[in-house]
Length: 363
Image (cartoon, rainbow, N blue to C red; front, side, top):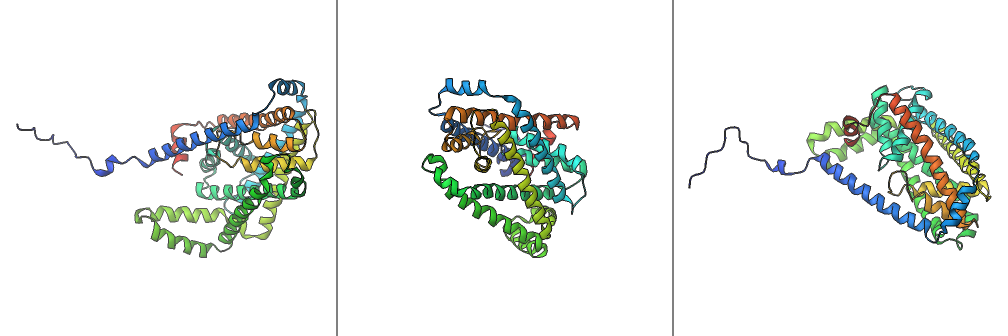
């Protein structure tokens, strides 16, 4: 039996056509990351709420004086303004951008972290900064990574300042009991990363030569030009770390930011019927924020709450009150910045459209 000849326009499928598009692979990987985060959040919620007496929890929530949230939210937004100033300071060698311009973009980024998985808000604010001010995404991301490294160092500092007191609490909570070992490991990671970034910033030419050596040997030739361009822009983003004075300023600013956030913890505490020291809240702040680096569902569900409740119960606060306080604090940290970020996103006329999503997924 004869078969019909192929149509003139027919093109046989190449092996590459059978392979998934790189963007499809990225999306599948992000879905996998999302569901892993959901699973971890469910696990942490179970850890946070096991044994909780719901009637006592609701009683603690109903009796709370929520007027204390107003000064707490006010102090928090002062901290967000300082964050915007810190970002403006880190970007100074690249482009002088006023803090009042950086503040809305910063809030949009934190909104993105709260509602999208995998801290997509960090890339979102870099993309928006490029659209508004023409700063390359690679350079912006370099400064954002520097922010996160300094934040991690300060959080570990909060834990270490309270290590003597923490040692007295380890018998009260198995969850807190392992935090000393985690703090030591975390310190090695964050300090090691900071040293690498400082060396890269102070010796950009040497770093570029090393980078070129790896690029030429480990990446496809067709990608060399793009990767080298990204590397050079990334190194430009580290320019602010070339001065010891700048490093000190970024560190001190980071301390102020997290002390202001601890101030919010302190104000919200007054809404509930318990009292712990400001240092105890510093410890709680450090532990919960280090815990939120663990993959979780958007908004750090569970990874914020379980360690927060564990720290307070270790200080002798009853579980129902600790849970009511921690969940209220979580909402007070999440909702205002998310609403303000959404407002600024709408005001800028930017939508989470396919084009914006594609820009973030390319990175």
